[in-house]
Each structure stands twice: as C-alpha cells, then as structure tokens.
Length: 273
Image (cartoon, rainbow, N blue to C red):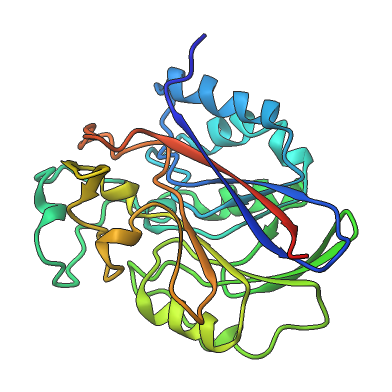
C-alpha cells in the first residue's frame, strides 16, 4: 500500500563528540476516530522507520471511543522509549464549526466539546512505559546519550505553566522540550533555560497553504508562532532548534488539508564534531 503521508526528515548536529546517532520519530495530531482506517494503517507502518525514540506532541483523540484504537494502533511503537504531551483534543471532543474560522485572528475564545477519557489515555501510555511530560521532567538513556525531557500541558487551552519545569537542565548530554502548541511564551522560556531542541505540533503545517516561490506558504499557525515556522525544523540564532510536526490528521469536521499533506518526522541526531 502506498503511503498517504509525507515523511519529513532532518539531521541535527546536537550530540556530544563520539556519540552514536539517534533516530527520533516525532508524530502529532493523530485526531483518531474508530473509522480512520487508512490513517491507522499508516501509523502502524511507522515502526518500519526503525526509530530509537518516539516523541508525540498530542491531539491523539477525536472521539470518545478512540483510546483503545490509539493504544492498539501505537502498539509496536509503545514498546520503544517514548514521551508525550497532550493537546486540547485529548481533553475535549471536536465540535462542528466553520472550517475556515482558524484563519481568523485568535481572540482566545475556545469552542470546546464534551470531555474525553484523558486519564484512560494517560494510563494506557504510561502503562507501556512512555513518559508523561505534561508539567513533568524525565530522563531517558538512549544508546550512549542521556536525554533530559521537560514539557508543558496544552498552551492553546492556557493549561501551560512552564514554571513547574523551569530551570537549568540536569546532568545530561541533551536537553529537550516538548509541548503541543508552540506559543512563543513557551519557546522563549525553554530558550532561556538553554534547551537544545523543542518538539511541537498543533499547527497542521498551516492546514491550508498557498503555492509560493520555492514551495508553499502557511496562512496560519493557529497560535502566535510566525507562519514561516509552521512545519519542519527551523531555528532562530541563539535559540533551540524547533521541529513542528504538521500532524497526521484533522478535525472530523474540517477534513481539508491544502498543500499541507499529513506527515511524520524522522529526526536524526548526530555528533556535532
């Protein structure tokens, strides 16, 4: 079966001299429902990329019965070292709204649906050994590299409080930040603590992109992140690398993606020397 998603690959020179490469699978915004059979097949194929570490930046759910589907779909990946943070759709089901409303200015008002079984999802993921980074720090040893992770809860719902994980990184080879929605307040706070890389999702890569010189251009990020950083690896001088996943799914009520195909990231970390 041919892939209906894009594999976005990048190599970042962030490991200490002599350390073995680390292959990170970063996925986001699955928005799974029991009927998403093609997407479920695609997600199950991720294991063939042979990652050493898995990072999910949230929005696993789009249906109140989706938790067993998520856990079954991720089954093989859950056997690998992994970390996660939640997005708004892990707390509340999507609601019908104008699919173009996300192109308008964000006034902070949220149309939230019925509560979802968030704790069932959290228990399922942590029960397989994945680290919950919603306002937690965690350490993992991957190969010969000790990684410190820290994360926040969803900034789109104003559930984030970076102060709960703030401060210098512990004794580690690499410091990584994880959050669902890449609001500038979180990126700035993580930059101040001199993290090496930040992983985020939420943007859907703009979801609707216009053809542009050399490619396409996002119309929105659905947060205050500049549009040019809507997907992929970007960096502002003196700040951490940022990888934003354009995600795999969409809201069941806004099933459109224009010039922004579903994607998963494979980020290879290598020695900087």
